[in-house]
Image (cartoon, rainbow, N blue to C red; front, side, top):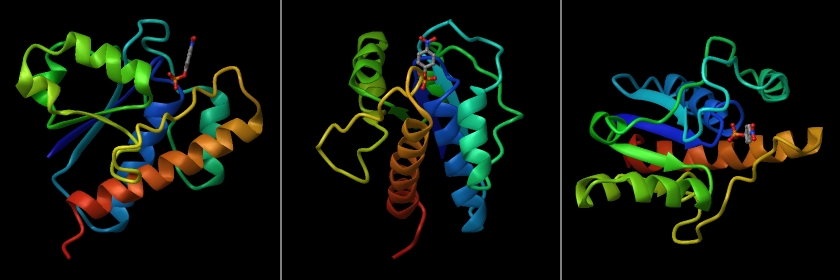
Length: 155
Ligand code: 4NP
C-alpha cells in the first residue's frame, strides 16, 4: 500500500500528515506501507517543513527534519493507491489533474476516514498563530488514527 498526503506548499499540513502516519504505523508494527507527501504548488520545492510546523510536531515526539518539499506530479496518480487532500481546494485541484476514473477514485479528503462524507478541511496554518499549528496537529492526528484503523488494524 502506498499513501500520498497532499497540501498546497508541502511545508505544513502534508509533511505533518506524513510524519504522523509513519509514526502511528511504526507504533503498530505495520511495515510495507509507503507514505509520502507533496504540494500542488511549486512555492517551496526543496525546502524543509515550516519551522513552526516542525516545532509543534517535535513537541508531540514527531521529527520532520529529514523531509523536503516537492511538487505533486502526474505520475503520482499511478504510483500511489490513496491520495489524501488537506482541504477542498487541494481536492478540487487534484481532481482536475486526474486522467480518468482510476485516478479520481484514489483522491480523498485527509479527514475522510475520521469524518466520512463531511468534507472537513484541514485549515491552512501558514498565516496563523501558534494555536493554529496545534489545532492542525490535532486534526491531522485524528485523521491519521482513522486511516490506520480503517486500513491496517485487523478487527
Ligand atoms: P501547506 O501550507 O499547504 O500546509 O504547506 C502553506 C504553505 C505555504 C503557503 C501556503 C500554505 N504559501 O502561500 O506559501
